Length: 382
Image (cartoon, rainbow, N blue to C red; front, top):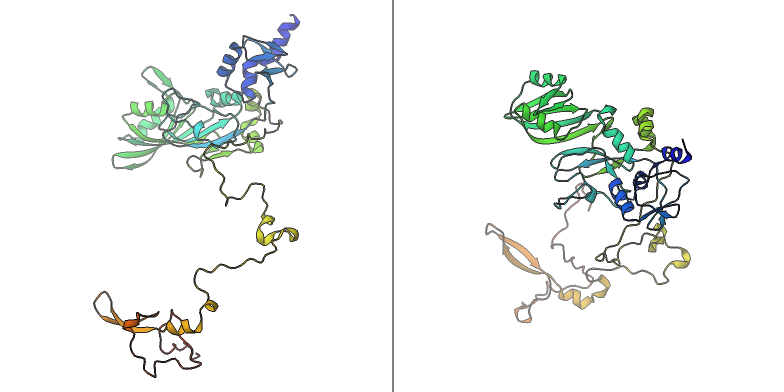
């Protein structure tokens, strides 16, 4: 065996290495290679049938390939009405369009139908995604199903031996009838293969029409209280414990590499900075009431008043604002005595009697209080 054959067996396919770096999928990487955008050790390649090792220098459009980050796994609660794909020719929305910004390029572990909701696993490692979705891995996928129709538990127990529907054989299935509500019922469905539309096909074979399908678990990972549309990353230590040494060895997952820094968020054209928005670099100590001694404003802050100040009203104006008595009616037409404050029109001013004239030292009532004796304190104090 020559050295070239030995070199080819030791490395990995160039398209897989590019996909592992998070730049593109394997198919996209192969298209880049065919277009002459990829070079290895300074030489442009045209065929993806090439293995490379860590000693080789791979570049895409003249830019060196970034180092692959550690294997990561994220839990995503997929809503209904989203496609499990990176793009759709029909223009339907996809789950990757609704993910938060700053995440690496992610791949889905298996798929969920357009109208199926629930837990879906996302990872940045294509080899790990492939191993987890294989039936040979033996991970159980559990669903909650709402269906229209009727079925007995005996017919569901018969699915443990497997079933063949329209020439397609499905492996043993664990199905439990949870409750019946009129013409609808809820089931718990557990499968290990995950073939295309397996749950709907098998239940349709039993005469049931699926109206809602929710995946609640995938292997050891549970949907739990994860909100719809939310995403949560599994810690590396927990991920290694749940995968086990066999799955890690099959996938060749690397947990020692660092996590790449997230890309900066792009500012859209309509994103205009508001003057009241606090800059990201501003610290809490930079507030006016917590500023440093040298940076504090020299002018004393003045309190803002919404109404007129007490010291701005002169004594004659206060006397002119004497309350005036009058009558008004409530909703039932009953007379209610009220007081109107402010100076009435000059022609409607009544003649003041000596008792109505304000005496010296007499305290006027506040505008928001009615005249009369002040109510006594409940305990007798005034």
